[in-house]
Length: 365
Image (cartoon, rainbow, N blue to C red; front, side):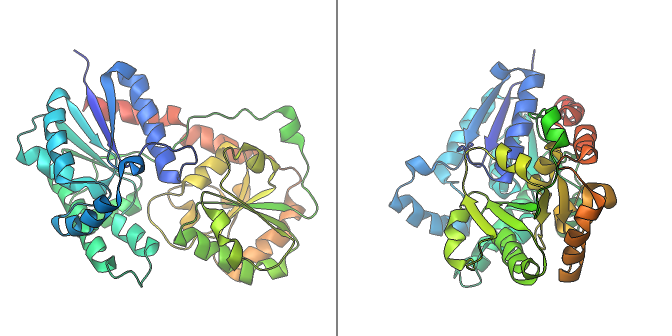
């Protein structure tokens, strides 16, 4: 008899998804293609449409019990009953370790798998303001949940070796599987797109949600690099329209913020600019840029988990001087918007078809 799987996720895709939500959806779609739609059900922990002010207030006190991001005693009880109908419980984020703990403590006999999108204490440390009075409590809650994820999960899954090293260092558990960031290949470059020449000045795209690790890198680039290079800079990403008051009055900067479809922006860009200096996990926007066959000038953090040839994909840059030099030399080295190397690397290493084999082994383990 085919296995039944319950996919527990933070939230469903709301149309303008952040990187983690996109990656979750890709993995879920791959599982559906392997087990069949009828064998998999979803359970979203976080449902903004149903949250009332009183729920938010209660949430503050639930932190101290290891529950946050929508987890409540009611949900835990609900999941304990629901889980009995499934052979596999796939928990799509390590901050929900309390769910794995609750299931095991209440006698769940199936297999629990937990996917680490990041080493979450780093993610939350970067995400939260130092002025947040609950920052320490929240990070302690995150650590507690990740420890429970390692303690009570039958299988732990990580994106890359860097996160695995952190997981082992802090929780003394190695990942059992590695599933790197991937995308279902939804892009077919036209002959016209493959031959489009660079614009003058080059059109650079910064793609990312309004999140401190992204905005810190973006504002650093605008302050330190932009005055010294001749480019246009487009900014696209969920919530980025909110940074408008902080942007300098520079007609070379074009702010679009949240958009329903980024295809046109990616196709039009000459270079993806990724000055990301903080974070954990892997950057989904790097994978997405490669799917579209883009040149990328990015930091070490933006390429973490991607074993690329930097000379072919664009350039590795971590300092003001390196970014300036890479951009200045770019038009001397390349002529067209389309980067065949980038596209090929994506297809060979990060398309969902590649991860299909890994997930198949995972589900049969």
